[in-house]
Length: 505
Image 1 (cartoon, rainbow, N blue to C red):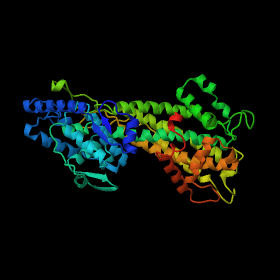
Image 2: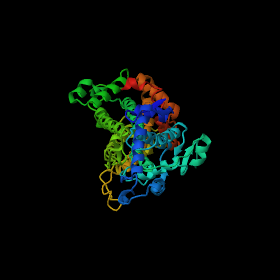
Image 3: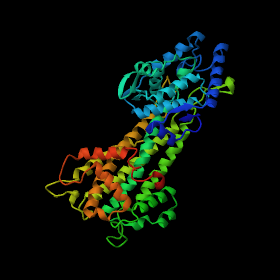
Image 4: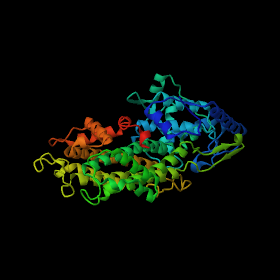
């Protein structure tokens, strides 16, 4: 069981909970800090001290005082009124991540909730009761108010959830699992919704998928190198050390390892003197995307362990400070950066697809067709890839440069970080399909060259790919092949079955 502390949750641990369904719990020490914070809130209420979010209204209503007997109703009204999410729901895995991250943030002990609130959140994670949370409607400050309100509804027995493959009223799922809804008390509604967990959860799931796809793209690019008799000299270690970027050096090293015993690659001057950039510059381009992913990982792991609500309670209630940790700017920037990095992996992949299918750029059958002219082969697969990379270019426009004032101009600058995270996820899905098309074309090309001449590692990948997509012996509906290949690449076990990622890194 993973014990949360609010301090040291990692992406690898998130992967275990989301993909391996590891159970979660809360450390006793952290719960003690939560209880002290809660006692501070109760003292504030009993002493009738005026503190934002505890006995005042919210946003522009922060100057409106609330009677002590109404503070519970205040929290309930907050959740119901702020549940204004619209559009399709987040994927279930993102919803689960959101619940887990909110619990971890509250465990830091700055939020003033009762321990039972955190315990209920962890029960949702462990029983796979995932709130139905519409994707649209968040400005990314004051946190992800609308999405997190839909999450909070489930704790009080309202709203809807995904449970065992069905979408149902939350109260029904809670009753099946024997979980009692809670009645919110002072500050608890605000503590649940004033944070960045929607954009961070979307970012976490997007990053985990992006990381796997980045590794797979290198294996597929290596297979393309074989299909085009690519020049291996460009991957020589000294070339990349001479520039100095670690991620570029590492990418080149992995590709050298994949192709170490290939009989299909060439040396300078054997077939041609130089390759096109989409082959020759794989370490430079892919390596730069890895630089971005490393940056994104760092920011996500900070935010996963951050106190992002408002106000925050310090010194056992003696110091309650209204700040702006709910502002999603750091994650907005990271998500916009990830959008560009993954769009570029798709861009260079599409250019390699073009080199695989264009008879003016290689000595393979035109469009890898078994009967050029009579059969079109992979011609329109390249069209589809081109459409996806062009769509990515529009999605890659930075969301974080936009801001619209809200709450009567009290909240006059917002991050749009959740939009950035959602668009990043869309780009990753598009990029996977582009790279799936490259896989299909590369497999066809190496078949023509001679599978028996492939490197050991790429041949294993080829064999796994052929379990998903058969050889092109005649024209068929390739849309189904693209989706099967993309689904295979998304599988968390796909890359692991070929080799251990630890050996790749």
